[in-house]
Length: 307
Image (cartoon, rainbow, N blue to C red; front, side, top):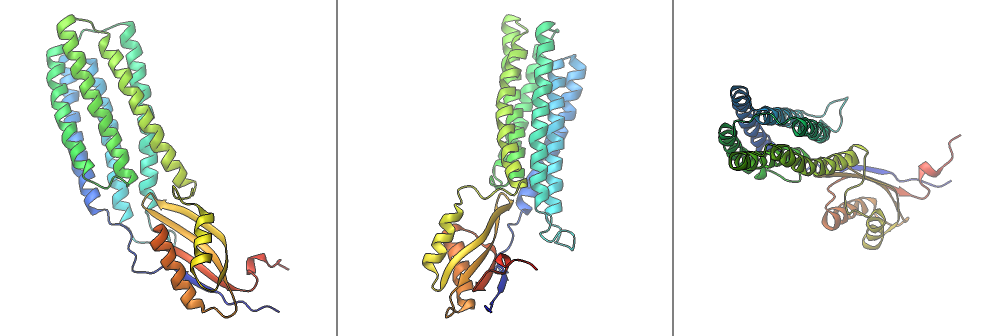
């Protein structure tokens, strides 16, 4: 009968989860600025009869919703783990970023539909008023971009919010260019053509964000991590370790990789020393601080057929 020496370890507790207070504050101020300007732009569009400005105000509304979602996600992340959410609420921010990506697709679809309508029947545009509001919009978006760009770009919530604002900045630039061309030449279709070009850039950004967040929600492994390489490094570096198996790596958030594994050691190896040494290899060589490791002697209990 083989003996088993099992040790479980839920990582070193001094590894804290990344703090998001600064990012949360940045998203909050960005949300207030975008929401405030959205109201001004909607009023300006209604006053001037400019569909272009009203459409852009609609775009700003989705940005406001996206930023509010991001801010809510940060607030939720601060909640402590409980019986139902043993990892805490960190995944809320990934979910919010995923929804943000889907919102960007809807924004792009809306702009394309509006562009087709305008190409079929161009409406009269008060280009002077359009130019003034578009310039103010660009300045507001540049300020919001600066606020968000100072945050952690690895955070998917911040990244999603930045993508929305970049889309808005491009929309403002396109509106300025369209207003100037209409003022100089009177050629109305330029408004719709430039909005479609902006939409293509928004779609590319949205696809990247949805792809990344889907990978995390599907428990995909951290980017660039080769499980075989990790296993080999542990077996070569830690005395007494003969095999590493049942290795699983996934992302709780974009900044927080988590792994679990079983490590077999020989009869004479010190289980406690092996455990500490494996943690050190994981952290120093691969940046993996949050690990659950099961130390085994002899046969893995998972390999024993159940009666």
